[in-house]
Length: 186
Image (cartoon, rainbow, N blue to C red; front, side):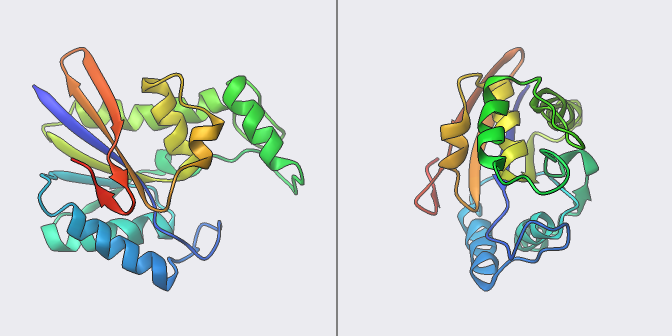
């Protein structure tokens, strides 16, 4: 049976904290995303517990009368604890070496595993069209799992929001970016 999994990066937010809200622009982006997905079948919505992810899923869930399922495994990856003035360099190296693990953080491999576990669990469900709302770094690692060449430069090109489609048919899977210039390309 063919299944579609939509990976969505949250809309523009006021910051990186767990409770950071969407900006006014981010709220408009979430509404636009909902409208853009109006012709797409969605049976299930799974979101990071971070407020900005839930708020991104909100307009679509409300329009479709779907529950937003919260899954802690979709929380943004913690690169490391404390102030990391060179965080961008460290993040870049974590795309090359998936085992790099900073103090108080998790490796890319660990984050990738928990994110893709959500996908694998969702694929086992009866839902055929699943929308997963998460964060840029974790989404990049989930994409990298299915498309190993996806790297740091691709992460830098992600927008808020952004959407990728994972199409799974039996053992075959293909992944493509379907959000371009604030519109779907499918």
